[in-house]
Image 1: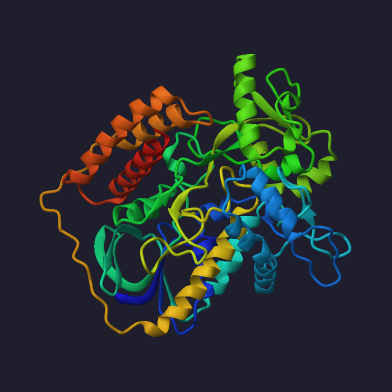
Image 2 (image 1 turned 90 degrees about the vertical axis):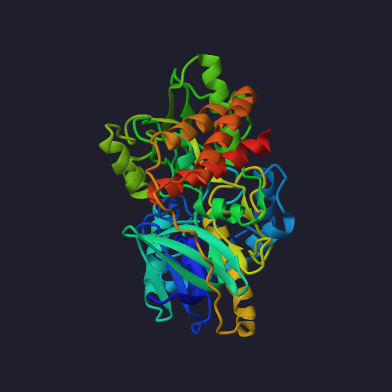
Amino acid sequence: MENNYDVIIAGCGAAGLYNAFNLPRTCKILIICKKEMTLCNSALAQGGIAGVYQPPGDTTDDTSDLHVQDTLIAGGFKNNLEAVQLLTENAKFEIAKILELGVDFDRTPDGKLHRTLEGGHSKHRIFHHKDSTGAEILRTLIEAVKALPNVTILENTMMVDLKKTSTGFSVQLLSDGDLSVVNCHFMTLATGGIGRIYEFTTNSKIATGDGIAMASQIGAEIKNLHLIQFHPTAFNNHHTRECFLISEAVRGEGAYLLNCNKERFMHLYDERLELAPRDVVSHAIVMESRRTGSDDFYLDISYKDSEFIKNRFPMIYENVLEQGYDMTKEPIPIYPCHHYLMGGINVDQHSETSIHNLFACGECSHTGVHGNNRLASNSLLEALVFSRQASDTIAERLPECTDEFEEAVFPEKEDAVPMPAGFRTEIRHIMQESTFVIPDTAKVVEGFERIREIRRTLMTGNYMIDDNYVEAKSLAEVGYIILKEII
């Protein structure tokens, strides 16, 4: 492996891969994958990708303005309007591009692209591959990027530390227990979300906020990290930290939400019923649980044709069947669970952070698109649109770069000891107890003091650098920022 690259991309989800694909072929690129390429939150995205796209021979009464309006309503009108307009206006280009690359979206019997509906959308504008759209898009992008001769991919490699240099950035890496340093002129952080900061999440096990934490440590602006989305319909199996998501699209196809008495209840909280935005539905479930004194809730689509359910939601059907529930015949247990981050590393419309030539895209970034709450299926679109923005900006600046690379020095640890067990578990418990759906003010203040202490211990202690230590340090930094913002 070489040490110097034009661009280093941390993260191999949709944002990182699309960023690499859209960079010039003359650009030397390194992609760092924390685990295997397919393990990322993009691969878990079920519902689809939202956008107003009208291929030849198709018709739609949808418009970008309507998509803007739905996004603003879902976000409580706290969105960055210019960013939302950029997102919606570019949807047609990015959807056309991934179709050209070979993404297999579902089609109607007459061959037209099928559009479905999800909560918060006023029109059918969700393009999907059954109920595993993210995995299909990721498959296509992995295939496209692996074919590029200018891209080096390092799997099972962790980013340990990041430093700004006079020529760009230096990144310390950990792979198979060995530390190394690579350098670049441009750095893109596409490191995903922070799900593992909660006891229960729909995110993959690698979602520990590493990119956000490291950007924070070198002075990048972090914004609205406390704006966290709790998906209302995670499968209610609280025996594992990773909770299987029951897609928004199930409600979009007509599923009902039921309380412990198997009664519909959304009419008590919002006129949009089951198709209200995610934050509204999650809040309603928590309020209903307090009213009924029970955490038992269900999602029921069993009144629909069984073959339709199996064909439309094959992955969800198989997963819940393995847990002992047949969604074609009975309601399935659900409860809100951590799902997505609206805040992150603050970026402009070129996806550039407050640090020159440091870019961020995907869930780790804060574009302002989502406001206080993300509209369903805008995440994959955001990953594509804003990673291309980063690619275009980097491409414009590449000719200005020289062949020189400064390498930062990362201090060596002598007589380092293993990190004590329990820090990560304690952080997760604090965040779950203090900030789940409806924050508990007293617990937020108490939790902040403890996480601040943990953060200080991890930053100043002489601990061995391994995966566990790096992730614990990231979680402590992220938790510290979230609780500080709330206070």
